[in-house]
Image 1: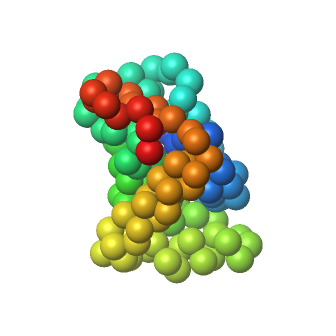
Image 2: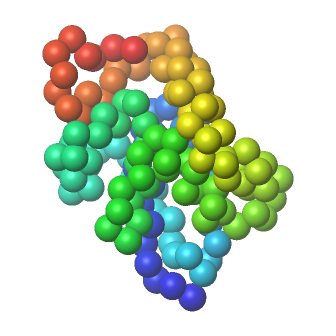
Length: 135
């Protein structure tokens, strides 16, 4: 078994993102999935910001020193998934195709942004973009 930590950085204030991250499972042989709230100040969030990745536009998966962003992150997670349980099998089936992940991820992100707007949540705005506080 590997002791490799695989980091998944996401917006914990988003109920849909939080639910997804709580139930996604990766194979034990791949490593240990560590969930990180993007709203908390952390070294990995500084790395994400330094790379110019807008966390409000996509989750980030850090594995073996590589960063996977948005559709690439969800595609990589599907390939690492344990396939145990209905959700993980569905996640693998849906996002194992990089092309399909690239098509579906923006749709899911739009739904997420609408949900956060309805809930009155503010953006993380890790890139400190002007007038970028609300969804």
